[in-house]
Length: 170
Image: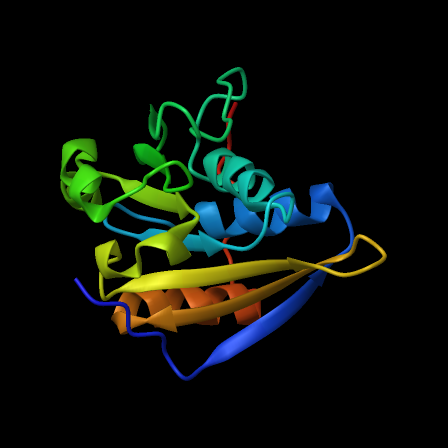
């Protein structure tokens, strides 16, 4: 697998954790099996907050605890689309990655990978790449780019705000 970041990108200012979760939830509502979001950025940048929003949009039950799988490495959540949340932070070598079943997850779930920059060779060619940065005042900046047809489509959806209404949970 190779990471080929597309030439089209966008930047979004996120003024609160709620805005971060809301943007991600809107994106999660259109995600499908096979979609991959690669999250990058320093500690405390908002990667897990973004993943919590994706989980909401993917229909993961509200009572389900969605936290960074730093020690478990992989968490799976049921939803409208099954959701696999991966964390590369504690992985020391690419030799450890086949045991996690990440490639299989790409075929059966929507996937978010925190610390994706650690092993970019393990990202599929078709993905949405998100880098979160923190400014001095605590404001987050989300930089997004898409690689492959679906990654670029998710980027366009994120950029254009052309997202469907939230599904009825009643």
